[in-house]
Image (cartoon, rainbow, N blue to C red; front, side, top):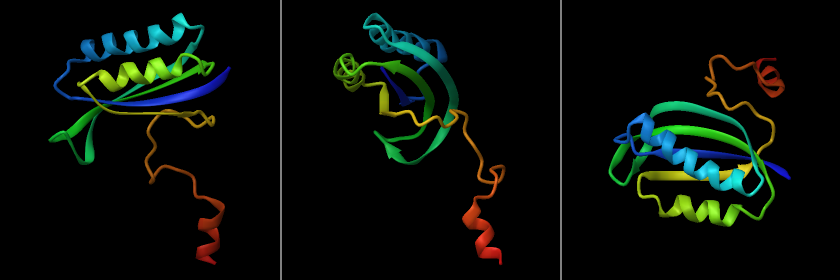
Length: 117
């Protein structure tokens, strides 16, 4: 089993209960195939960089799960058919936190220090 992370961007017209129902359906497919949902983080309504289907904002959710590769094609097919899901992205999880970080609050990288000298 490998660790994955999915970012969902839902239409903002959907109430939060509707988003939770959709997540339960998606995650139910995964858990039915032996996967384990390890974290779900609702980021809430965010402004989009560019309009998607004439929407200027989206409701973001990030989920992490452990799964084999077998249920992933059906999982992605289910998401692709949902018209209220504006975008999604499934990637291998690299151990990064799911909470959004501000550039102002992050610690400086080593190469940032080199530029000051």
